[in-house]
Image (cartoon, rainbow, N blue to C red; front, top):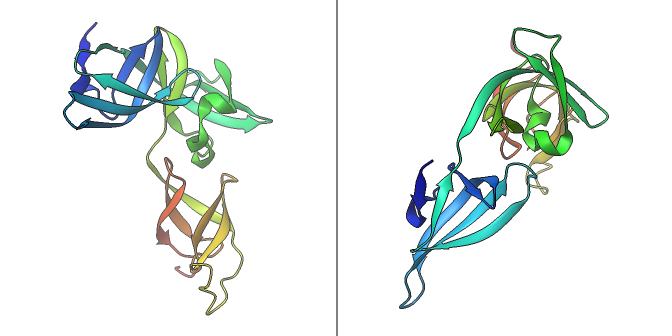
Length: 194
């Protein structure tokens, strides 16, 4: 068990507060007028998914969470249940709720290997690839000159997720998505390429 000083509590670190594991989403060390420095953070509770703001002071120390990882295979989802299995043994299946899996899961294809996070042998979340390439299954045609709305339209991806993308994206295109933000990144291939 290692203790972190207030200034060591930075983004992407895992800490334990009140017996619960948290991921540090943002941190900003600053000094208010003549006072001592403060580290203002946003923390995500890895068990509940709730995000809270917390300020650490110079005298504060916090336990660094020991997070274990294991590889699992995403199988499918149905009615808010997300099913996974052990990578080498598909008969060992388990399900989690939509809240436990998080919003990034909507960009993951069936049979994809992902990382499950464990805290003291208790499952608490997943790490998905930051970017994925997905095929566009539905895209309304872009109307020439229709840029009054910023040149965006809603498209549907092969996983069923709906995102906003530029007007030039068509059905059949393969695009890159940022799974953390749900934003369109770039077009990899288009439906006219043979």
